[in-house]
Length: 105
Image 1 (cartoon, rainbow, N blue to C red):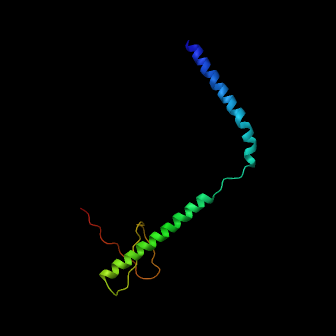
Image 2: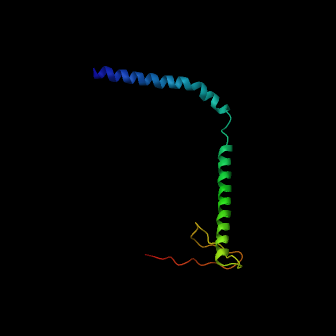
């Protein structure tokens, strides 16, 4: 009984594989002549992500300035520390800021 079941399953699998090849042969011939997939959705997502970051940075800087002006009215606002960058960074105009000391519990 197991011999007949296994031969039946193998025969069905072989038929499936052969018919699958038979079905795809036409599409395999047409495939080189298809138009390539468009990069427009990917590029538009990258552009949207870039401008989202630019707007987020502008809002963060504006909030930093407003907070500083509330605490120190009439003074010039110092450079804002980079939020997500912990390495060395160059200052083009102005003085380099020092990081506030980290409190360890």
